[in-house]
Each structure stands twice: as C-alpha cells, then as structure tokens.
Image (cartoon, rainbow, N blue to C red):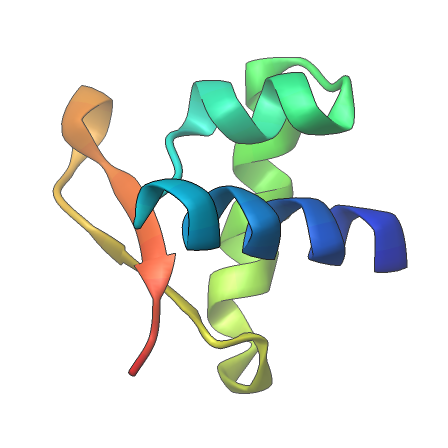
Length: 64
C-alpha cells in the first residue's frame, strides 16, 4: 500500500488532481479494481484525498 500511497500523492501534486485512469495506470490495475481501491482511500479520513465530480467526470484531489 505504501507504493500506491506515494504514487497517488505524486500524481495529485504534479497535476493538482488525479483521474481513475491515472491511478489505474500508475498502479497497474484494472479500472474496476482501482475504483474500489480509491473508494477505500477516500473513506479513510487520514488519507488526505477527496473527490470532486461524478461518473466519468470524477477526479481525486488533496483534501485541504
């Protein structure tokens, strides 16, 4: 999980946001597995990650 944590924070820091496609490619997962993973990450209040948008327009951003 540490590598995944670093990758998502790196993507968000670089672009200001992260798409499901970005995360799936960075972690070498299918989009459905990546989506489940991101749902768990957002549910953890300590993760510092939240979402904006919905469906195909959803992005993950740093939670200020």
